[in-house]
Length: 403
Image (tube, rainbow, N blue to C red; front, side):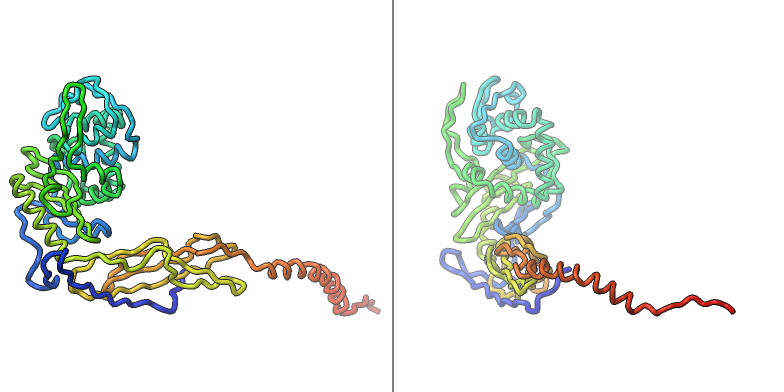
């Protein structure tokens, strides 16, 4: 049973309006300077650290993703393989339409090389080679992709292939692709690949310097990735990320009319996000939240098991509440054992529930065991005395004879 601790910490956080490197001074979130009017069918802007959605336009509307599919292909392969894995190209891989790195049947490359070929040059052949190697077939790998998407929380995504070539059953949403992109960007190897502008390619029949087709890496200050796409049915699609100072954002734009419009609308959305939002740390992992009272007048510190971050609209002063709830732990208590939870709320809305863990191991006090061992002989001695006394208290009875 949990007990609420007597106190509740109320933090008044004022998010300062930043200028200089963060661009022009933004208006308050409740003023007329609202979100941009984007010439796209669907879009989502998300804070990279917290996962909070800062902007949404038709976020759950199904769309064909085109080559941004390869974001999920890459992270699934990275989680199941090693960069030096050797992958042999099949005939099916060589028959893929669209962008290619011109693999030939039987050509062998490392996973690392194929990932660069797939993510920079958008090689559809590289995507199929990777899929067949780790999934046994395109269908097998697609099943792995869909399972990973569900684990991430992308519940409206269903992929049938690893490269995004058109299939009427191959769909996702802007929100799902932000989730997938944010998840992938937590992998340092993935981040390195999608931030790379050029990569030397040494193929069996084709040598070249691959140039990343995500032009935002050249045109947008602070851009860090991640992937663009196009098919006739999908039109232009993009997942893009950028960092300025301590802020990192990720955006997905779907069904965009042209490459120039894609870059313009993505830049507009990112600019608006950087100008109007800031992410702050509310609490740090390892921070002592409360003292836990234990049997035998012993104590332990309840530590936050992870940090808590929140993205605020700049120019606002939200009220942040931290409510500590402690368990009644029994001894012995292991170091790192959960002893309660901290519930963080912003303006009355719960944003995070963080387990609290003990900062030390605590054993039962030695005196309690000595008392118990000393008490046992006394109890054994008292038993016969109790029996004697019970007999003495019994009333004397004599047989009665009827005369």
